[in-house]
Length: 155
Image (cartoon, rainbow, N blue to C red; front, side):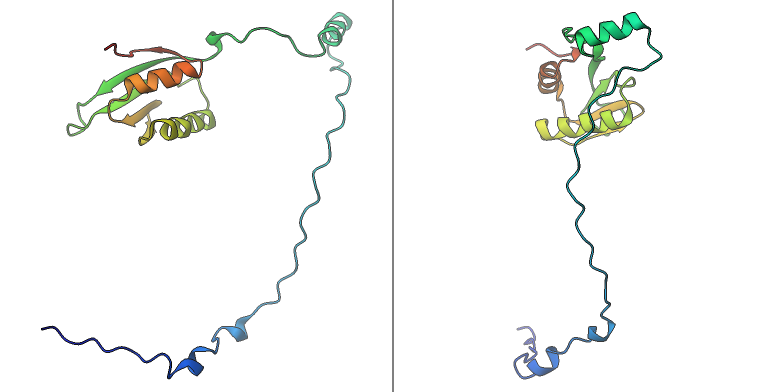
């Protein structure tokens, strides 16, 4: 048999526990008001004065926007590859070709991938590493977002 544990009788010492030892250290902090709602941005001004009169006329005609279809060539072509060497037998999926994407864009893409696929991942030397063989699932997910993908295995 083990020793019987002694319990502290809290009810008997309730008055001691009601005092706050930090009450004397209370600070009078200033009241911070919430910022007001953001105001609407002013209407767009005339196009830049460095443009020629013909260019300004074209901008007015198209109201500053062109209705061109978004091509897939604007997004980089990605290569998927599975690797085990040098990883103690653990399988990882490498995504290459993201060197043209800026750092915040890569981090956002990585976060979306990890949530969508439910796997861990990180960036290392301009390559995205995902845990496990995720080539098929990742390939479908990337193609759904408009990327051109090479290296998707067929089954």
